[in-house]
Structure formats: C-alpha cells, structure tokens
Length: 511
Image (cartoon, rainbow, N blue to C red; front, side, top):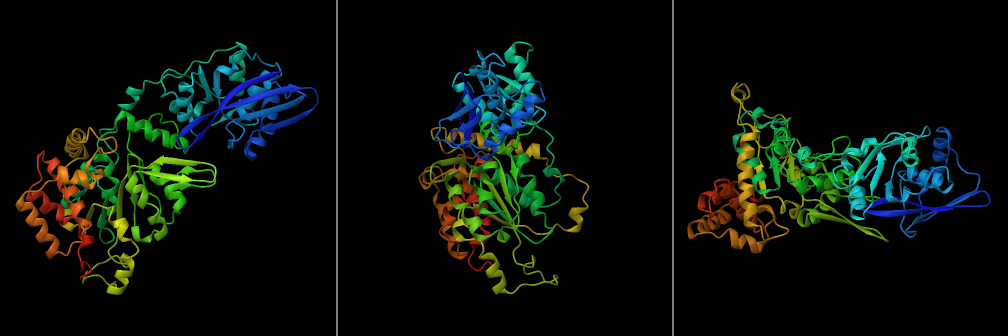
C-alpha cells in the first residue's frame, strides 16, 4: 500500500513542501531515500520506540520511504512525526483518507511526546499558499504558526493525539490567534528607559536623531561614560513596528528557533554579539545556512560593543549587508538570501587604555598605540556610519540629581512624527523608507541647500579637514534634524548641528 504524507523544509526564510511517500511491500527491511541527513536516518529508532510505547508498532514488512523532491537535501529531526504517521497509514494501522490534507511536522521522543521544531511560521505560510487544510506541529511552536489566518493549526503534545484525530476518536481544537490584537500589545513602559539616564543631553539628542533617520551611529568615550547604557535604550525610542515588519522579523527568528512562546514579535530586536563572534555567527552561514546576528537584528538594532576588539575580517563582512540591507550566502548547490535591514550602534574607547588625553588618568597611550588601535576599523566601514559622537563621563552633581530626564515615550513621539514625514517623502520608492537609505540622487533632490548653508558646509570641510565621504552623511543627518523640527527645507542651523557629528572624519582627531 502506498500513502503520501506531507512535511516541509526551510531554506532561507522560505519553506518548500516535502512529499513523503511510504510504500509497504512483501519482505523485511527499512529503506529511506531522498537525500536525508543522519538525523533523519536515525529517526527509525525514535519512531519504533515511540509507536511501541503508545500501543502501535513498526510493521514487519519491507518499508520504502521516498522524500521528494529527491534532489533536495533534507535536514533535521522534524520529520519524525511525518514519517511515523506515514508508516501507520501505509500499514493500515490508522485511516489514510485525511493524512494527505495536512502538513505534519515534529520531533519524537521515545515516549511519543513531541519536541519543538524550527521554522514553524514559514512552513505555515507555505501550507496556506498551497491549500493544505491544516498543520500539525508541537504545542511549543503553535503560537508562531497560528499567526497565519485561514489555516487550521493544531498544537499537539503526543503522537497519540494525531493518531486519535485521524481515527476520529478525539478532537483537537485549532489554535486561533487574532494577529492584530497580538500585534498591538505594545509596551508603553519599556524595560530600559531614557528617563534613567542622568546628564548626557547631547548624546540623547544624537540617539533621537539616529532613531528618527535610521542612521548608524558610533559612540566614542572612556570606560564608565555610559555608552552601553545609552545604546540599550535606543529600541525604546524607535517607532513601533508595522505589521509587515513584525511578520518579517518573526519569520527570521522562527527559522533560527528563537521565537519561543511569544508568537508574533511586536518589539524591535536588540542584538549584542560578543567581540569574539566569528564572521559566520555575525552574517550567517554554516554547512546548513542559518541566519546570523545581522539578520536576527532585522528591523531592529545591532549593538557592537568595543568595536576595535572585533576581528577586522569579521567587521569587513558587514560592509555589503550594511549597503544592500540583505546578506546572500552562496553554496555550490543553492543560494540563500536573508534580510538584514538594521541600525548599527557601535561603541569604542578612544585608545587601548580607554582614556584619551585625560591628565588625571594613570594610564596613557602613545599616539602610535592610538593610531594602531583606531586603524582596526577600516575607512569603508566608517563610511557607512552616519553619526560619530564623543561621550564624556557624567559629573557627580548630574549623577546625584533626583530629577528624572525625559522619558522614552516622549522622545518616541517626536521620532515617530519625523518617520511619518519620511514615509510620505519616499512613498514612491520600494527600497527607501527613511533618510539613512537615501542614495546620492535622492540626497541632491531632498537636501538642496541655500547659499548660506552651502558656504557653511564648505568652510567646515576646509577648516576641519573633513573627508569627502563625510559630505553625503552630513546632508542625510541634516535632513533628519530638519524632519524632527518639521522643517520643509534644510537650513544652516541643521547643517551646523550635523557637522558636529563627524568626529572620526576630522583630520588630526588624535591631536
């Protein structure tokens, strides 16, 4: 008897339906074909034990299983439940009429209980597209899959629940989640709030500008000046995610198996990899490609603390994703593209000792040591960072102030208003949503300067010896400053403020 059941494989952030054909014949044997990896080949032992412990068994016949398409490599243990139901249906231990109408995925334990899988959301999206009636999966993954409307999603804890469903002995209620209700459960009181930051008004202003225009930013200052504390609060002032952004982000985290019980992610991600991270950990890859930190930070913030401590080759692989806002991983037989549109926030000490031109510091670094330290960050990478700001330690009287600063909720209102202006400005462009994404053509169109502003910029570039690459960055930041004030054109005041935020471009910055 031949029975077809269906599973799914995830490549990148998209799923491909896998047809599992199970054939029973005279003889004895177990033959699994269709490019399965070792985890799938070992499944026969898990399936046999799980079925036996639940009152069923492997038939004493020749079992041939084909996983089609046969030229596509199948990986992972998530096909256990698919294979088990196929074997039971083909050996007439359960009714086979309905099994082909559902996607069935899950890893079996020896007692028949189910372990969570990766990629439940893209699998559910594909199942709906291809007209499947429902999707059986482990209960731990049910919330992320139930985001997809129009598909019956059944979260199960044991293989017996699935068997009873097809035998008509029991019913399982599909999980229903109102995606919009789930999405609008926003946090008005973020875990990290800007009201807790004492002093540092200029740095808060910088972070507001960076959030409003989606600009990459680097904070330079000695240890204890508050760089990490401020960076952690940036997500609290970013505009709320749109439903489309939330689905994109959840999809990537689902593929990486990091959604847990949350269902739809409605908070922007904040990723902070350690400086010992490899290039594969940062951009993604591996023999079976997985999304890296830059993709997990999609629509959110990637924070690189102590930037010069990262290996140079690790930082260099970020150059292309920063420009294209996606990362492509190529292998001999396939190519995978992960989205990676994130805000880069980096921090660094100005010297190896951490103290820069501080007469009170017992530790000093020679100009040669400082030059070598700063040279770990390449010019092309700095070219992609719009705002450079020096952070100074907070004086004692500011630290002991009882008055709270402005809250993140208040700042976010201004940031959201500025983003709305940009959304209207770029509504005709598919790939541009905020100022940091502007190309040279858009900069010339939307950042036109009057004579006074042009003269100010020329003078600043000559006197401060600013590099040519700073020109476009200053104009982008100035446009964002104008948007925060709801000003239709960029004026000299906006240019003057933007010029302050190019510390590392100044020739002779080391003194």
